Image 1 (tube, one colour):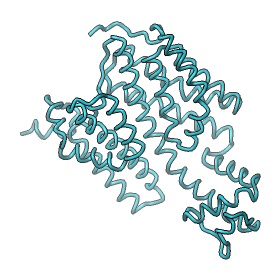
Image 2 (tube, rainbow, N blue to C red; image 1 turned 90 degrees about the vertical axis):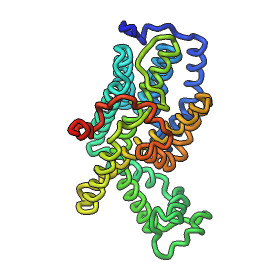
Image 3 (spheres, rainbow, N blue to C red; image 1 turned 60 degrees about the horizontal axis):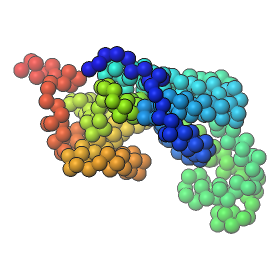
Image 4 (tube, one colour; image 1 turned 120 degrees about the horizontal axis):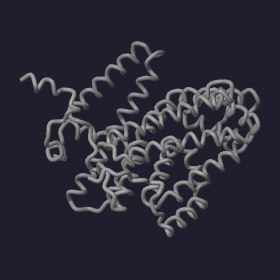
Length: 363
């Protein structure tokens, strides 16, 4: 393999694709951000898109997208927004580029980039908390409370709909159907329902935010390296790469993760105030890992049958966004039983990452 640097930011731009990507960025950025607000899971895919542009299209397209995002954040939220946007993009893109330029091993690069992304997210949380004068979850809860106070009766049908879905409790004597039809709530009932909703959101964010930061950093590091290296390979430059169909946990680590999850579950039952959040975060990581492994197992079977990468991409989208539970089950089955027989084909040599190797050496 050629050991010279790849020099990603000096590679030639594909100007036709560059122009097309810039137009699409200008047209689709606001709708994409709207979707990201509705589904925060999507937010951490945006740096992956930048790395795809860098690998497949060229540095001008990628830098334009980053500059546009930072400028828009600055325009909407001021200097604080611009700073947070820069922290969101610059460190992980730089780390991803450096690891590819130096042709570091794929798995090592994923770990480095995931760690950089997590540190960047922690810095963003720290900046926002310092600006708000409190922790970010309390700041978001207070902002939502103020928003509902400004809306007044306009939010009553939404409150009633949440109550019908069982998300919040309705005060005794409130006719939810009538409120949805346009009847206004009295001030006391409105305050009670808003407080109930804010409490629900606050509690959910305190569990969900750390989990999303950890799993999102992992996925950003993994997919970012995958798309960037794939783009570099398409340009005829050889770099270490692991196709999606080969992604798998080293042998033995399924048991380690399973036992750890069970230990955290038991701890959360015994000490709920201290370990529930930790169990939730680790459980999210567990699900994310086996979801990706289940998707990879299906992609391996598609590859063996000669189906195109388009089908594998469709499987990824369906498995990650729509059929996550099924993908997790397939991932666990692949780890436990190797139902695709891909491990028998891929793991031909002794795996140094197998935590149970020492037992085989003692025999």
